[in-house]
Length: 302
Image (tube, rainbow, N blue to C red; front, side):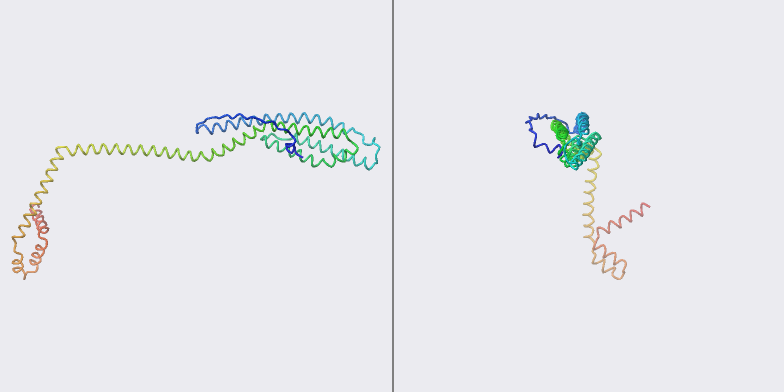
């Protein structure tokens, strides 16, 4: 079994965790996340180095016990030769499994703490799986020496597990930081869009204020123009022109009433061109009068 399979066999102490609240401005979150990740990575590396030291220490201890096991004389036992052969073969295979186990532990690369522990757990699991039968066969004739190695490996696994439990908060905090980073990366574009929208709104409000000021100045200038002597004089002239126009129209209509279109029609009925003029003037005297008057004026002007 792997070292994490020993969880149920260990008595865990109740820990009271202190909650530390940090208040940050949104603009400071990214820097805070990166700083916490770097700090956490340093802590993880410290724990990994500590575990490597433990591996080295247990490596030396197990190598001494392997030497004792290698020197164990199976042939000195009073047992059948075929049994001795099985035990000798199993002893050699078990020693090889232990040596491979130690080599794999020593060759572990520095990595993220939780992944590092998963690799260790896999090494323990593979060792237990590959060495179980050889251990059982070798213990037919070898007792204390085999048990000593097994106990050392068991004690080592418990020590590693305690180290993991003691520093599990480092792993948990790292996971939390990564979750915060992920959420921040999702929120940040929204915040940027919001900031852009706010900036656009500020810019638009500024343009609106500028236009309102322009309109105010235009209205102010317009009021000045409306009260200026030139404008008032022009306004009076327009009123006078309008009044004269109305009087002129009235005079023209009165002139029309003075004309006897029936008599004119009777007189010019044999003259097609003149008859057409009489008819047109009867239907729209005002317009044609002005048109003809304009032609007369134009000729005089030339």
